[in-house]
Image 1 (cartoon, rainbow, N blue to C red):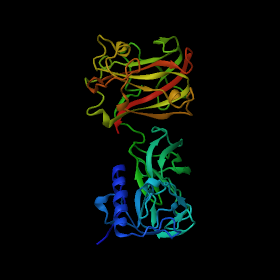
Image 2 (image 1 turned 45 degrees about the vertical axis):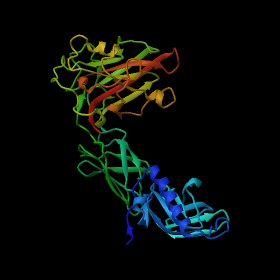
Image 3 (image 1 turned 135 degrees about the vertical axis):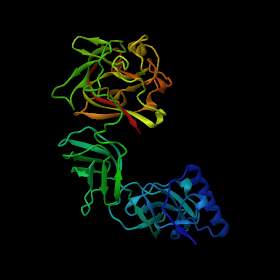
Image 4 (image 1 turned 60 degrees about the vertical axis):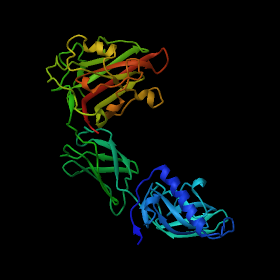
Length: 414
């Protein structure tokens, strides 16, 4: 008895096996090759591409899934439409009796619940088939620490605002935010009063999903510049509390420094902020326990201007208040560091934000030495932390200009 199931992703190798096995099966049963004869393409059934599940037939599947159309007179097919969306075809996966393809990832404007096949001679064939739209998929939020009344942006995919079933954003505590605009991959929403700590839920006509990130995340804090400070080190950094504040004190990295210069500080500003955990009175411990693969460094940042130098995020042992001091950990290569350099990676040579944003750096990206070459991260020496601006200018031999604010430094699970 045939089994109707939902489709799951498969590997490229399995696709190849499926293509050949499907083709051989039909060639062994039929000697009539009507390719190029103008015959109407016919799909007998649709199945998964895993040859071990060849008896698993499909009547519908999710956008983006790969499927096999099995039938006859398929060799001349040049177009395949799911509802009103065309699929991308690869002639290497088209035979007289099978077509392997991926269902388009675009939301259909007109739903026919049909697959339409068109040959080079204009012959058309129709097969009933439904395309499922996944529930919302949440990737990140512009500012995890946004306050009630502020507008923030949620990024992801499959955000569908159906007139009959409007999209909803529920903040922790199941408090609904005011949805201001919706695009397929982002939502503008106003943070409601009473939003708590935890995941955000987005509901659409196609289902509901919960974020892996936490809103108002309070886990794994290392520095908040209020209670968890950098006091006790030689260079705690320039700390402010003013109209730019996200919530209380924040760190300022500001000034001009030469191309790849090793500057430390200057009057009225600075390029460095150190946390010597032992000198600060922190318990003797690392910032996290376990495999770095499972963790990410996060902080909020407000960038007024930035056109040169990398933010070096340098890890060191808890006992950094004794020789070699934490600044020596930076100049030397006691442990690996991460780099934040959005002015370079965005390809423009400059970077600024419109207010505070959340920055996320997987701990797998803690992999650079003081010359920005490769270095292995030793998680057993992750009990102190330094932010230090050093690196190339946007223009060779030029000046690195920056005014970067930082708050709420933390390490949380992925």
